[in-house]
Length: 330
Length: 263
Image (tube, rainbow over all chains, first blue to last red; front, side, top):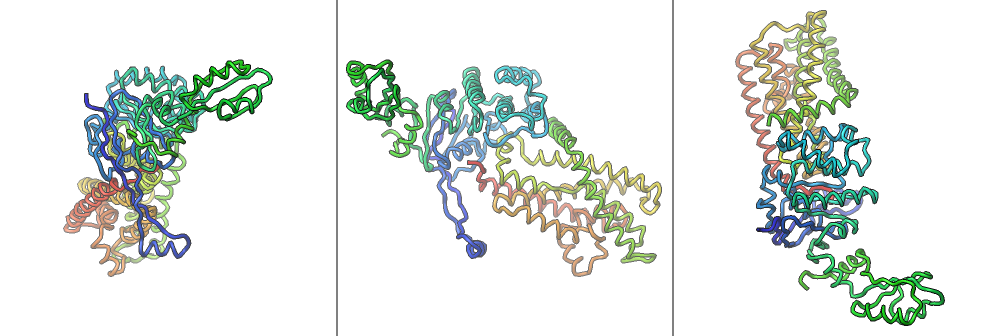
């Protein structure tokens, strides 16, 4: 089966007006406007199979959302080729749009003054969903997202988390096979974030949908995505499994210890780099390949109540990835 | 498409219901301007005539103007400007329905509601004030309906197209303000075009402004007769064609430029 999404040297360059500060700058910009090219996405290539959940990672302005919007057909690519479920997104027209859903965490499609069900009904008409299908799908989404009490309340009275659940419902009624989610958990509390994550995983399992998401929350990524695309300054730095990235980037492991009496930071320093020490808890960092041996030595030499070996926090791995600039296939 | 429009209209009406007070205010604004203009011309005309307009002619003109203006007015540029600059266009572009349809449905919902109020007010006023009565002329009313439809379409495309300027500039609504300001004089909102100084009337005659308001109004009051009617419809069709072409050009070019705000 061909991939659901293919991007081949996909690029987007924006022309941005530059002007010097002050009145003189403003006048000059009026008379003789100057433009600067901003390369938001540079020759990014990847292929995503149907049913995959893939996360875009990168700092603000890295080009994640721009890529997502090119895949969804909102932005016209400056260069390269992109294909989503057999369509060129830009010229895919209504047929293409019926196959995808785009959810933007910071923009909503729900009609602000009306209960969410009115937006659902509108989408039923826009996407031409048969009445029986609509009832069945709505019932499924209501059950999965626990929306029962929300359908009749005006959107403006819903909490942020409740609104996002309704946004997802509105976006999924036409049962798209491709989901583009831009920061779907932005600003939500932990419980709501978890509910959204559980739902997305369940939706994918039930309907085999392909999910592409951007998120600032590592929890979203670790809980959902089997694969990450790391993008920085418009370039793809890494494409692969999260675990493989950790193994490649993180040359160290963390040994987390709970100590019994009489152990000092100095005593620990003989075994590795002491990252933190607050009795009885301590964290040591040791080279990856020595983690097991060091643990054995620690257990033999010191009064240790508990010990566990962990990868460094994923945020740190990502930070390292940006700092070191992991190249794809390196 | 019919089902989509039914759903869009339903939502537009439901939203309007939430904003009854603001609709009344807009309606009052739409009525105040011609009422003030009528008051001024009524006083100036006295018992005589100005360019063929006596008091009763002014009364009919401005009542017709109230109705036609309400039926043809378009404020889509303000919406579009916001959609584009604040990224609200994104989800609209991701749906299998052109965003203009939502705007058209909102136009229909708003106009149906407000214009029917004006029509009732006009009918009630005509019971007590003979000056605003129109002669019974169903054929002329049918022609007016067509002219109003063409004018509404033209004003919609003008508004939508100027709104699309937001793809290039943050001052799209200023351009629309400028257009509204010029149209105040050239479309017949402040005075019938017959009263304009010849130089200004000459400028108006080669632009689209008279066809967006003055022509359907004069058709309704009976001021436009014979060749003027044919000329008016021809002008409407030509300028509608020009603005549809301008819209298509702007939409295609603008979308390619679109930065899809928010990331």
